[in-house]
Length: 481
Image (cartoon, rainbow, N blue to C red):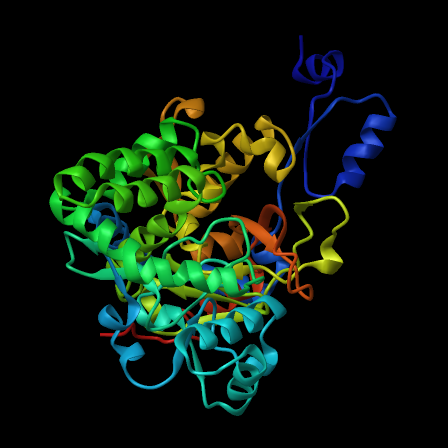
C-alpha cells in the first residue's frame, strides 16, 4: 500500500499546541485531539524572554552558583539551642525604641490594621507608652521606630512584632555558625501575632519573658539543643507540612523537652506550665520552624550569580523577595489579596488584611506549600481535595531545582519536597510559589484570625529580580564579588 493510501486509511491523530480554538474546531468535526499545555516563555513578554536566553558562559556560571546555593542549603543543620530576650541576642534592639516587623520596610501610616495594633500594644508592653493611644502617637511621630525583622535575622509570624523584652527562639546552624530568631508563638487567642492583642496578651508575653524562656533554655541546655531538620523530617511522615499543620512537630518538640526538663531540675509546677503550653498550642512549633528555616536560608544566601530565592516576606501591604545572587537587594511589589482562603462564617476577602508574615521562609526551604502533599488533613482546612494538594506539590517542581534529600513525602513514594525556587523558572513558566497562610482581620481589633488557605506570590517580584540578576541585559553584567 502506498504511503498516501495508508495515511488516508488511518484516522487522523492531532496534537494541538497553543490556542484552544484550534482544538475546539477539530473536536466539532469529530476529530480526537490531544492538547499540550504550552505558554510562551515569560508570558510572551519579549524583553523578559530575551533575558532568559543567556549565552553558554552565563548559563554555566548561573548553574554553578545555583548548585553551590543548594549545597549550602542542604548542609545546613539548624539546632534549637535556647530562648532568650530579644534585646540580648539582636544587637539593633539594644539601642533606643525599636520594633521589628514582618515584611519589607513600612512606615506606621502605611501599615495594615493588624500590624498597627500589634505595634501599639508592643510599645505598651515595653513601657514606652502608658496606654495604646499614647503609643499610637509615639509611632506616628517616629519616637518609636520601626524596622523590618528580615534585616536582623529575625522572622516574625503574621502581624507579630518583636521588641527588646520579648522572648525569642534561638536557632543556630552547626555548619555555618549563623543564628536566627523568632518569637514564641502566642496561640490562637487574643495576641499580637493575630492582630487582636489585649491586656491578657501582654500578661502572656511577660510570662514568656519572666519564666518560660528560662525554663525552655534550661531543658535545651541539658539536651544539647534539638536537631530541627531531623525532627522536621519525622513530622512530615506524621502528616504535618509544618506551616498550617504543626501538630506532630509540636508533639515531637514536647517529647524532646520532657526528659531534659526533669533532668535540669526545673521545679515541677514551672515545668508543668511549660508542658501545658505545648499541649494546648499545636502551633507552638511554627516559630521554632521559622527560625530554623531562616538560618538555613541565610546560610545559602550570598552566592554571586545565584538565581535561587532565599527569602520571601510580607507585611500585609507589600511582598518582598530576596535572591541569592543579589546581595541585600529585595524586590518589592504589592501583597496579594487573600482571595484563595477559606473563611470563617460571616467573613470574606473584603474583611482581610493582605498576605502577611515572614513565615513564607518555610516555602523557601521546601516546607509549607511545597509539602502540601504530606498533609492530607489540610484539604478541608485550605479548600480543595487531597488530589489538589498532591498536584500543588508536583506543580512546584516546575519552578524548583531539586528534591529535598531529607524532607520526603510518603504519598509521593517518599520523594523529596520541591526546593530551590528559581527566579528564571518562575518567570519562564508564569507559575508562582504557593504559600500556606492564615488570614487576619484588617479593621476589627478583636476578631483576630478569620480564615486560612493559600496565597500566591506576586509574579512582579520575580520579574524585577530577573532584570537585576547578573548576566541579564538590563541587570548587573558582572556578579557581586
